[in-house]
Figure 1 (cartoon, rainbow, N blue to C red):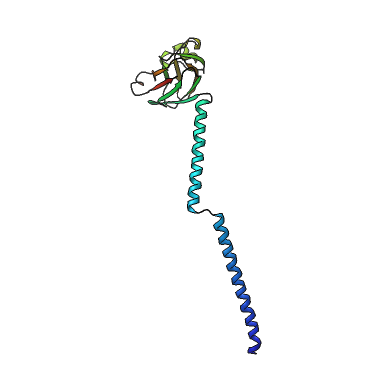
Figure 2: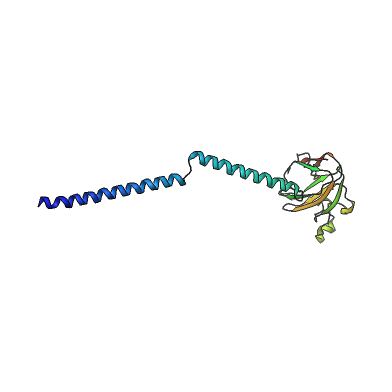
Length: 199
């Protein structure tokens, strides 16, 4: 009886060895496959740096486009500052300033020395202290910051809290010019900045 069991045990042993070898082979194949598909730490760092460089290049290209496509400059007014506080322009190029009042009170943007050629401007409210009692009762809003746009030779934008206003113009001279908020006390509190116009 013992002799008959020996071939049976031998066959089962061979079967078990075969299964173990096959499983080990699959694990090795799977490990090798994972090593092929998963990058090393050095490769991952290199890939991350390449992606970061590509993102920076995309951002620089985007910023370059913003500076040349339409030359639109976004300005934020709040208590008591302008962002940006320094604006660089080129003489004889068309620009659009788009100002949003994110503050809680009326603000304006005044630059009264730089000679400009006015192209267009959005509708703007009158200064609160310059609005007559009749205008207040009727809810009248003046179309321009002051006077007719044809007569304007300097930059002036008015905005109530939450308003966005814009002005398109061409600077006609080079130099460094101060802009500020003309509401009493605002310029003195630091609400001012600089426009630099180059050739």
